[in-house]
Every structure is written in C-alpha cells, then in structure tokens.
Image (cartoon, rainbow, N blue to C red; front, side):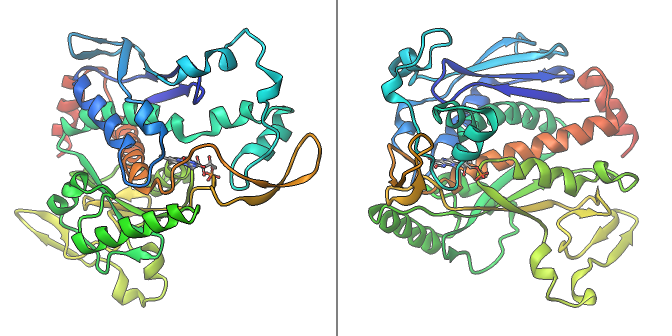
Length: 378
Ligand SMILES: Cc1cc2nc3c(=O)[nH]c(=O)nc-3n(C[C@H](O)[C@H](O)[C@H](O)COP(=O)(O)O)c2cc1C
C-alpha cells in the first residue's frame, strides 16, 4: 500500500518526505515537481515569505535516471529562510529566551498545541502546524500525479469563491479550468477575478483576512476505485479525510453535495444510460463521480471550503500563556488570502488518494505489471 510521511519545521533546515511502495519504472520529471512547488507559492494575497522561499525538490533516494526504483523515495525541500533562523531553530543550541512566543493566535494550533505538548514557547507548535508542511504534500502529489497520468488520469483545480465574491455559474469545462494557472487568484472568469483581487487588496489594507472555495476536477478515473464493503474503504470518505487535513480547510463537498439537500431526489440522481460504444454513461454528474463510496467513471468533482487566514494584522483578543494577562494578538508576517495556493495543495492531496486507491485495485510492483492489470480490467 502506498504510504508517506512528512517531517520538518517551517523555519527548520528543510522539509522532508518519504514515500513507500511507489511502483518501479515510473518516469518522474523533477522539473514538473518544481513547477508544482512554484504553483503552490503563487497567488495574489500571499505574504512576504513567498519571496524568500523558492522551493526546489532534492531527491535523496528511490529514483535513478529519471525513473522510480520501487524502493522508498526520500526527498527534501530546503527552507532558504533557515540562514536567518539557524541560531533560533538549531537542534542542539538552546534558543534565545527573549524570543520565546507566549501569545497564542486565535484560530491557530498555538494555545491547544502548547497545552497538549506542555510547551512554554509557542514556537514549538507553530513551526510544525504551519501550512509550510504542504510543500511536501505538493511534491509527493506531483509524483503521484505523474504516475496517474500514465493511465490518463489527470487533476485540475480552480478557485470559485474568495470571501463573498463567487463565480455565478458552475464551470465544468476541463480546458477552461486548466487555464486557472494563468490567473493570480486561479479564477477563470475575468470579471470575477478582478473583483476577487480588489477584495483581497481592500481586506489587506484593513488588516483583515479572507477564506474561500476551490474546486478540484479529476478526469479519467476508472470505475470502481474505493469500495462500499467497509466504511473505511469509501472513496468519498477518504478524499474528505485527506483534504480536511489541509490547514484551514473546514468543509469538503463531493459533487453538488450541499445544494442537493434542498432538491427532490428526482432532480438530483444521475440517470443511467447504456450504448454499445460507451457502455454505461450519465448525462449529468451531480454525484461528483462517486456513488456508494466508489468512482462511477464520471469526473470526480470536489469542493473545499477554506476559513479566513487566522493570523491578522488587525489584532484579536487572546491571553498570554505565561502571565495569563489579556492582550490583543498582532502579527509578524502572513498571507491575507491563501485560497489559490490551497487549491494546488488540494489537487495534489486528491490525486494522491486516487493513486492509493488505484494501486489497491490494480496494484503491482512495476509500472508494466500495473498497466497490464489495468488494461485487462478495461
Ligand atoms: C497554503 C496555505 C497557506 C496558509 N498561510 C497562512 C498564513 O500565512 N498565515 C496564517 O495564519 N495561516 C495560514 N494558513 C492557514 C493555517 O495554517 C491554519 O488555519 C492553521 O494552521 C490552523 O489550522 P486549521 O485552520 O486547520 O484549524 C495557510 C493555509 C494554507 C493551506
């Protein structure tokens, strides 16, 4: 079974990932991984950190001559900011007491993390709870995306809402969604894009922050990934679990999930048709490509809802963990809106789940063996 680990602190030396059970002979283009890392760093509304970090992957093991070996893939992404933090983040040197953080930010892991792990310095929490960790998930997702593309399975995403500005209509056209990379807010409608950009600017000037919604579309997914036979094998449940683990994501919707609740069953369920050329097919896809916990062959459509960034320039009430005195929590440096970046993380997390389930169904040791099994089942 494909599995992975991530490690690393936001201002530590580097971020590290290990992927286990990635099949052999899969061609991996390192430039493509760096491109996906760059896509995660872009987006209107991001903070100054993104100008310091220009993420690049360094493969340490498991890939030779551009192809996977079947052995664990270990990699790292250097934190370029570490040079400014070395004394303070050093594994051995005792950190400077005067730089201790005792003021927890509402909406972050700060307070509860410090209570749970018994820390007097909140930096011990925020270094790991930070969304910097998502760079590792993008790198490994980029590898699983390259693996899935060998079977015609591809993922795209776009931003459908930022704050109260949203697309008026659903966009299902994959090519149109693919053009989201050209937009600084990953929105494919020009008018909505401009409104989103002004809202981000206004919100930034007011010292506040924004959340929003992004949508992931996965095409070419074969019938029968996931299963109805046991609760923990359901594909929709797995996608929701993994996507909810992205920092700031508070809600995950499959297909027309929440909108369908206000409609009648006859208006919701996708009728089944058959012809000898296409086999079974649907004329609608309100289910978002998943029925009974399994992919039904239609595009998988997922919407993720992100809360506004919790670090605000406009201070919020909090309590110092050392003195127990109230104070107004203010910030160093932060994103105003990270929905476009989160949309890239979402793509990569979702395609990793698809790769895991794909391997569970057609699994084998090498790309050739898996291809043979996949072809036999078509
Ligand atoms: C790509 C990305 C970038 C983020 N950037 C920031 C940021 O600059 N400042 C901040 O306070 N939160 C940021 N967040 C959100 C926080 O990491 C998140 O809200 C926090 O860790 C608490 O986790 P929770 O919201 O899942 O409960 C970002 C999230 C993502 C996915």
